[in-house]
Image 1 (cartoon, rainbow, N blue to C red):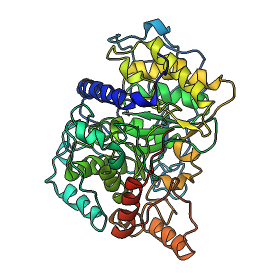
Image 2 (cartoon, helix red, strand yellow):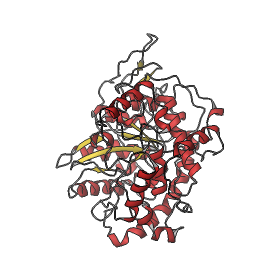
Image 3 (cartoon, one colour):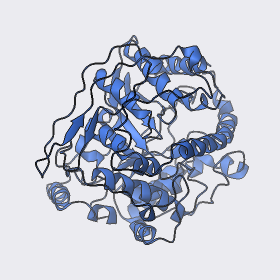
Image 4 (cartoon, one colour):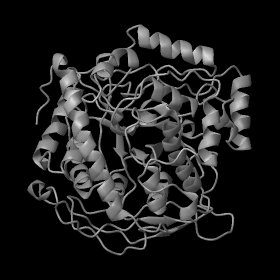
Length: 481
């Protein structure tokens, strides 16, 4: 499937994309139901099975050595395994799932993370009564959501009409006004606070959405073997279901970002529901890892100026993915393979087209990939990533925060020294550790010379935020990549 989009067809393409996205949401929910179980302190790490799939013998586990406050081992390593990849023709919809790979390392509470100043891994004990229903939009009458709603105070949240189903097809009038709304879904409209590409040409900001899942360890092993790091946009429901897998992502040096609680489109939710989706995902990550991300990705890229403002007020900078010269999305379509909408060879061709498009744009790029289904992971480790590693001209593969030039500490509220984003005087910042508050205050007192937030950070205060959101909505502050 080659990219042959023209700008005039963008709205129609967005329409069909969002219609099919409704089916994707159903697929996500069904898969989550299959994976649903009572979360344990150590999720899939006890598995001893191996995955019969990949092109390269694995290297020995790199088991990160850490110390704990109790003096107990910080990590337990699993013997290395060899993986092989199925032929492309065998990666199909409805294919039987083989045994999953065990985690390389099980990290115990008290282990020291690889991020400077980050707190030790906390103890996480799952209690069903403490959490909303998995893969369902959380209720808005909980004490937690009421507290998180206070984070919006002092910020201008645009009073935009809520979109029906979050689709262009169901909202023709809103879709026609997408440029003014900054609605990415219907035309790819962005704002200066959105991250949609890497600044340096031929740099790929790697990311994977919708995990963690039992298939993620296969991806993690490949990344470790190739000495690669990526950004994982994780769903809160799956974070509490597979906490050990999230810990391995984080402790292996990968970036962790918010991808909502239930993976629902956001523009068709109320302000309170959006806050619940972001807040519960943020809390799940914080409870399991001890850190709070400062970035987020809206499911399906479904964001407008209202969702942006809520995200920014909660200390979360939006990250989407790149659009090419003809406004074509840098989307591998891997998510369409499990449902049979696209074949594996077509998904590989989409990725090869992305690489070719990357050579003719002036910046680096961000690609949409997933680790929810086994087919998606097989495509990544067997075809997408090897193609990128062998591509000419040579590509530089990095996590998204790294490709922006941000210090890794700025990816989390507890370790950031960025005095302008997230806002140091916001309710979110007040939840940071004393050390982080002191560091942020020191930077602010020194004149705000901490790491900058790429693509135009927004200072706190209803006047400034309202001005930025308002100005970019009226003046052609639209980026087409």
